[in-house]
Length: 484
Ligand SMILES: CC(=O)N[C@H]1[C@@H](OP(=O)(O)OP(=O)(O)OC[C@H]2O[C@@H](n3ccc(=O)[nH]c3=O)[C@H](O)[C@@H]2O)O[C@H](CO)[C@@H](O)[C@@H]1O[C@H](C)C(=O)N[C@@H](C)C(=O)N[C@H](CCC(=O)O)C(=O)O
Ligand SMILES: Nc1ncnc2c1ncn2[C@@H]1O[C@H](COP(=O)(O)OP(=O)(O)OP(=O)(O)O)[C@@H](O)[C@H]1O
Ligand SMILES: N[C@H](CCC[C@H](N)C(=O)O)C(=O)O
Ligand SMILES: [Mg+2]
Image (tube, rainbow, N blue to C red):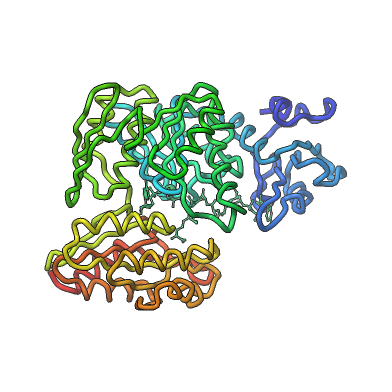
């Protein structure tokens, strides 16, 4: 494509540069290829403007930057735009044009991955070629890839959406992380519905206040969705009302789900060990379904997913009965093994306070013995959540083993100490493998083990280096050693 074809997004002064052929778009000077347009983005660690000259040396044919951010003597057209990140997303959508015809996005502190996976499964169950994109990667017919980010950067995202559309995928559900929304990663995606699960404490290293965090999430509704589009909002969260208000103010169609919901109203839930029976009212009819998943929070996630599926055109009866076949996303309160004495071992991705609280509460009703939890906190992330999670573990579990998550560049002992401060009675075992072994070894009949924090992850980052590590594998191995 020619630069002139992006004129509404990248306005050129005069006509010079209109005919320049564009090979690609890049926001990383280290990865610029000849013929690319370089977008100079102000980031959390660096300012892309400092690398504009380097990008030109590597073959960039034009530079897009905030007003006066880069010098205008680079030898290539410099295009100034108020919001370079948004310009990048819109340009990526045009260069890699094509996306599944129906796309929905879900935001919230917890439950996004589960809702995206459930929505895909409901669509697939009704015979549609469906995909999900999020923390656990991309899943589509014939395709399953591990991903690095919850919401991919716009260039990879639009390349992916184009591939999915070309392979026949018509429906896709994606996660909208607050980083992704804030950094405009989804601004070029044509969405037809949005979902909200809940808001809790997360990413307080990135957002100055929880209100800012909520406002960032509301971009999905007030900026990305077209007026009149449906927004499915979980109604039983502390932030549901504020979200409903934002949805109405944006002129969207508000569809609430949950106990206080009116679109899908949860009338009754009976918990069993690995499944729950729920009565859901929709438009005057009560549907009784058996959800084959443990945990109250999965009912919430299933309702948001069913809401999104119905909002995208699936018949309510079909969407609700598809819930009976849902499979949990990998590492979301996933039963990975049972000890010879019957004690259950779960792997869960709770790495923030409310998630840990929910998961420990979820296993209590079917635990006749002790709830044992093994967890840690990630380095280079919100530090204040560490003692909060320690307190929750101390309050809701009978045995707490504090271990390492992904320490990244931080001192692992210091992270553990910050957690232990709030739960001094906990056992500290830094080596995650040893911690899991110790927990499995102590399991007695009636006990439940929750290994929390890493879920589907298959690596552990220590001192900036990633090693292969899987909670699933470690739990199974430890169970094997314990003997059946
Ligand atoms: C904090 C954060 O979100 N960072 C993301 C952001 O990077 P940044 O803009 O802050 O990067 P920076 O290092 O400050 O550099 C600024 C600019 O200079 C450029 N640069 C830098 C150096 C150089 O030599 N040349 C050059 O051009 C960089 O490419 C960048 O464009 O934009 C990049 C491109 O989109 C992302 O890859 C990067 O994600 C990093 C890897 C990351 O770890 N992000 C996590 C925190 C994240 O986004 N998580 C969310 C939420 C997870 C959840 O659900 O809990 C997710 O969606 O995954
Ligand atoms: N609706 C919910 N309410 C509270 N906690 C939940 C909910 N859904 C999931 N959780 C908890 O959060 C963990 C992560 O769930 P999930 O991956 O679906 O959420 P997410 O929003 O995608 O998280 P992340 O931002 O970390 O990718 C689960 O393992 C569980 O502990
Ligand atoms: N998307 C989240 C994942 C955190 C997973 C947890 N295991 C940790 O390392 O803190 C983040 O990058 O903050
Ligand atoms: Mg996720």
